[in-house]
Amino acid sequence: MRNPQPNSKSCFVCGLSNPHGLQLRFYSTGPEEITTEIVVPDHYQGYPGVVHGGIVAAMLDEAAGRSLMGGDPPRFMYTARINVRYRKNVPTGQPLILIGKVTKNKARTAAANSALYTADGTLLAEADVLLVDVPKEMLQNVDLEKIGWKVYEE
Image 1 (cartoon, one colour):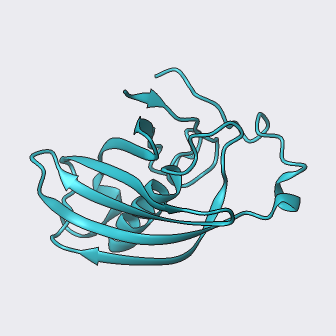
Image 2 (cartoon, rainbow, N blue to C red):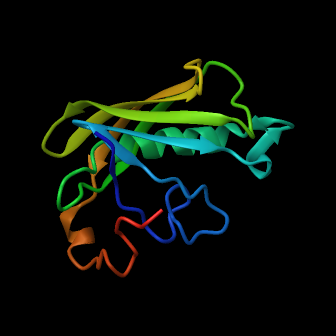
């Protein structure tokens, strides 16, 4: 199973119209699990050839949250806590695999794990993330179509 998830227009990680963003496309690959592939360009480096740690954290954060967004309507959540463990330098210019999986799913909160790997499966970084539902009143007037929340053709 590899079903595309919606993207937005402006999100730093998944916004397809954000010229400064990563423009990642996520796929549901199992119950409460997502994946994506990326080659991080050099302009996101901290040191030469190494992805900036903040960019790595942003990708891990998004993957964790997206593991809970497979429903209709989507479950929008924000990060209450993220614990990132950097295992190895994350290289720019090389294929990487990002995976997010739900570990707990409750009424208003959830927890997920996300991990970033090289194409050969070497673990580069991982995160445990605690997420909380965005309050319903914040979402009641959000026009998902207006923010570009849809599956785009590749």
